[in-house]
Image (cartoon, rainbow, N blue to C red; front, side):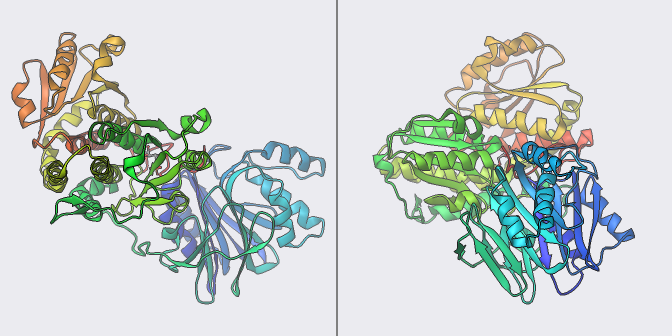
Amino acid sequence: MCGIVGIIGVEPVAPRLVDALRRLEYRGYDSAGVATLEDDRISRRRAEGKLGNLAQKLAFEPLAGNIGIGHTRWATHGAPTEGNAHPHATERVAVVHNGIIENFRELLADLAKDGYLPKTQTDTESVALWVTRELDRGSDPEFAVSSTLKHLRGAFALALMFKGHDRLLIAARKGAPLAIGYGTAEMYLGSDAMALAPFTSRLAYLEDGDWAVITPEGVTIRDGQDGIVQRELMISNASALMVDKGNHRHFMAKEIYEQPETISHTLSHYVDMGAETVALREALPFDFADLRRLTISACGTAYLAGSVAKYWFERYARLPVDVDVASEFRYREPPLESGGLALFISQSGETADTLAALRYCAGQGQHVASLINVPESTIARESQVAFPTLCGPEIGVASTKALTAQLTALASLVVAAARARNTIDEAQERELVRALVELPRAVSAALGAEAQIERIAKRLSKAKDVLYLGRGAMFPIAMEGALKLKEISYIHAEGYAAGELKHGPIALVDETMPVIVVAPSDPLLEKTLSNMQEVAARGGKIILITDEEGAAKVGAGVAETIVLPTVPSFVAPILATIPVQLLAYHTAVFMGTDVDQPRNLAKSVTVE
Ligand code: F6R
């Protein structure tokens, strides 16, 4: 997490550093800072809280200087105070850092012997102090950084600026993303292409272990062994436009409402609408027909997308699937039969645990595929095949349109796999593709329930705990409902398999407990209706999300029924996502929380 940026410019850089940080704020937003060289002095402005606080500070105390670095923070070591905000600096060097220096205590202990003492609680300051000691011993900046890097353990991206060197930035990457931007007479660096989009589209991504010496004349990139390497210069298509909220109050609302379009857009990549077939454009390094097992790893909402896909792959393609949260998978080190397929799902493509799981699988002889929203991301680049979701940048920290785009792409892959494995015939393929093609219209209709959902959310905002229940592919959607509610409204919520209710959680049910049941009409509906009776008998307030057919079967004891259009059960989990998103959104609005940037979270989790 954390976003970093640097500019060697031909005019004062502070305003543009802040502008770039605004596009990186999704990575962290608990404090921010910039440093420039003013009259050969390292000058800093830092502020606690959102970037707006830093911008305000700069308005009162502007920073001159044509070279600078900036940072927006998601705290790992040390509270999010102004003192712990980056850049961290000594008289000689300023540093911004994304990631974790795992051995910072050892480094600080060694530095203390020579009288180099920290002023903050951060791990980053150990880097600033170590480089300073090297400079004090007579090294030039390049040597000081290269020798410092050899002492650092952990995953990080760093940018450094030096007193006495007003045309030099040094950057390093080990595990966290970093791009160098090429301008005319100017050079840039940033955590991603979006940060640099208004300045340049010509980028080179550093690879793991690389470090780069950047001057207006050009860049020298070296690898971990200090050998000079070339990294491909590419043209990024990240939009220069700062995505705006349109008529919506929050990015999350806008992104929920974009879903008919983003699902269509994603679908148009995967299906031939005329022929009603799935037509994959990516060359596959494996054949679905030969696979014996699919291993899916991801985090958070992306993991829940994978969990829905498990039901689909097993049912339609008869392909056994293991799905796991990446943070567990990577350390479990499961044995994997060589030649299997490992699939990694990630909106950002930078999630540290998912990337580590990918590298583990690559080392175990698996075919490595990913499903990614940011095509230039590390996970996409390290995959043999990267399937895209085409939902555009997702700004709200709580994932919405990325999930439905992931589910749409996964459903398409399921159809491709099922055809290749001969578990469905042409007619069944057409039927499943038609269900997908008709989905955007059903999603538009589902958004029509907003007024009712807003009314329910008003009552939900008074709850202390909420239970979400679902069966089959609706179980992950129940978990997604609970996750979304927790992260943006801060109300405690749990998602359970409806059949598990009586094995424990039913003890929580009383007349104060809202129980949200996600149960469209399918062969499992009758079972879930019985579970609802168990809740009703104990006074629980049931909010049922179902479809027209399901609503007709519901008896007494339901406080509210949200009715979705009836769609084929294949795509029903995608449709059921809409009301759980709207419920969480409106509950959070009633609670008055910061919907787009909820506390303690960040959009891209590049630390373990
Ligand atoms: C929840 C949410 C997170 C992400 C998770 C994975 O609303 O957004 O749970 O889904 O951090 O992120 P990506 O998909 O970028 O790997």
